[in-house]
Length: 449
Image (tube, rainbow, N blue to C red; front, side, top):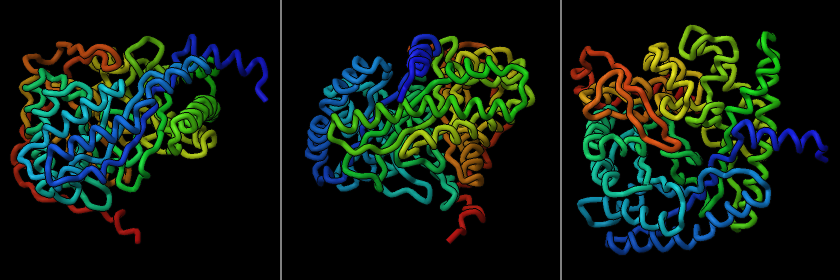
């Protein structure tokens, strides 16, 4: 039974502390849309998505109105298109991306994810065709997100795919003036049920359709920590756990309600603390509230480790099924505290790489100089994939080559994407390293059977 204080506390979290449901994402299987004719396959994809997700936005809006809970995004994820399009006789998969874009716009959702390929151990002809289609596809669509999984703890790292993705990211930036790279993420150990963009896709082990929900609430955690200033870290951890529990309960409520109204099975709640550029909605400010002068200084990795662990421990007790990425996101452009720390020169790419070891995802929404080479980008991908592979966790890179800009300039994306200061990369070349190709073998941790 909720008492008056519980209700007032929740209202305060929503009105003053930026608490929201970041996304309701409907996952849809497209495996039965495969066809030798690319045109017929695209028609099947459009028809199936618009049939299953036709009420997604209206149901989300109705839940918002009835419960007073903001739902920032309504999204769709689909089966990795490289798997669906493999049966089609066509030289380019751009038409598939356009079909996804049309379907998403018809449904009225914010984004659709799944223009994806899983190439951790090698590339099929369809995988390579999709990857090479990404720059053109993202330049000719508006709401489609793309992802490529280049490594895993079980398979190792596909360095041929790493090298190719370095060139793909570079070309995507040139074709879209960097904007397309906001919708392109490169993974190691990608998960099948991630509701967050740009990396969402509907994994092959998932049901026909499913509802996954991503919660947020960095501002709520920040506010809670202000009440325990100077307290020992075990008190800090307990405070974060209790706060994460409350945030996740709200996500569970919305997920169950959306599942019932859309006649779609409930999948998971993703516990990730997803920041925004709004003041008071920052993961960096949480870390600073623990006692750091600026996010990125010594102690930042330890503070983030505590935060990530406490969020998981608190949230997992509040939902019948937790999944996705579930932790703390550190996207530079989407977090006003991260932006400030990067502009001050305290938060660097090397420090963000270290922070990856203890949090969700990794080098996220980072702007680099416009003249950064494809080989340097590929080497950044390889470093992040190695962290994920060895530590049996998901890591990812969304790097934004800022065409025509250099260190110290700012890239403006707007909305939830925010703005990013252009951060320096190392000048020493990685070209010969990336040119080797092949596959970095899986670590000993892979031999668990």
